[in-house]
Amino acid sequence: MTQRRDFIFKLIPLAGAAALLPRAALADVPALTEEDGMAKAMGFRSSTDKVDQAKYPKHAGDQVCAKCLHYATPAADTAKCDLFSKIVPKGAWCSGYSRRP
Image 1 (cartoon, rainbow, N blue to C red):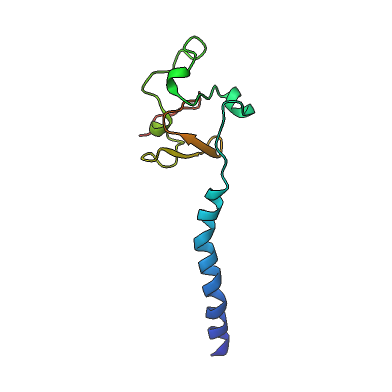
Image 2 (image 1 turned 120 degrees about the horizontal axis):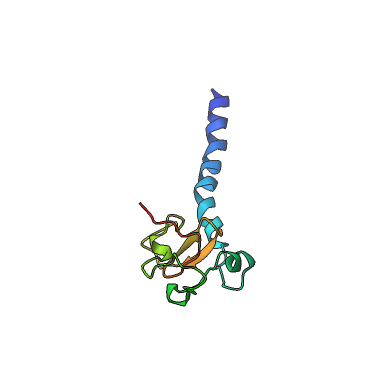
């Protein structure tokens, strides 16, 4: 009987820590800048209006991060991008754009 009780008492703090980890992990995610090496390679621009149309002919004006499959929270002003693992603004664009279904 005490073994079960000991197990429960050890499990409760672990469950609490596990619940807080995702929030703590997002707090340390940096914002992506246009000077970042991978951002340059992917043609990242903080605004879809700044994209070089000659270099990226498939770019369309309605393509923004908020409508991209890799943008974690579509309704947010900024969110984590799965491609860069950094925070990007909703109006940004990169060549990895993939329309959200």
